[in-house]
Picture 1 (cartoon, rainbow, N blue to C red):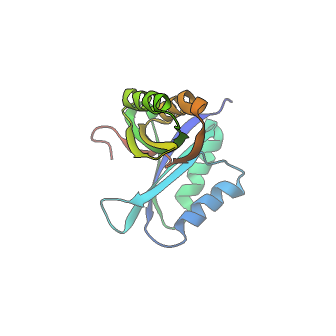
Picture 2 (tube, helix red, strand yellow):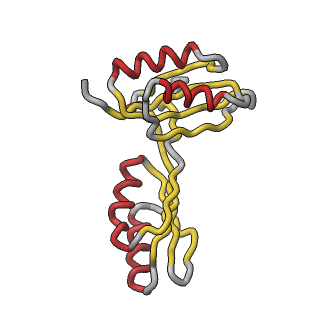
Length: 164
């Protein structure tokens, strides 16, 4: 079975220790988390965890079953990527010593609908929001300038339409 990217959405109780229990479940099964985001939902006592992982369907099904049995987990869904809105944010700081480099980076940021957050004497920081593929494409394009720092949030996702 071939591995593919899956997005798992879990609604959990908003209490200390829940993130540890979930990530420990992944670790115990030698399962890699590509990204994980956690934040409160429209209900202040619940949080949404969005976990992206590369796996095959059989292993993922086992993991989802284990997640559903975990204390403090209210609901777990594997989201259909074609029916899901998902985004990630990246902050990328690059070397930009000369005006030509700054101008080129600013043009690329504009094409990718990014925001220039900071320009220093020798660096420029760009914010890019989009799918992980879009962020990777921008990163690959600007690597030639020298990325000095990179921070990515991980994927946040919700199903499209009226699906809850």
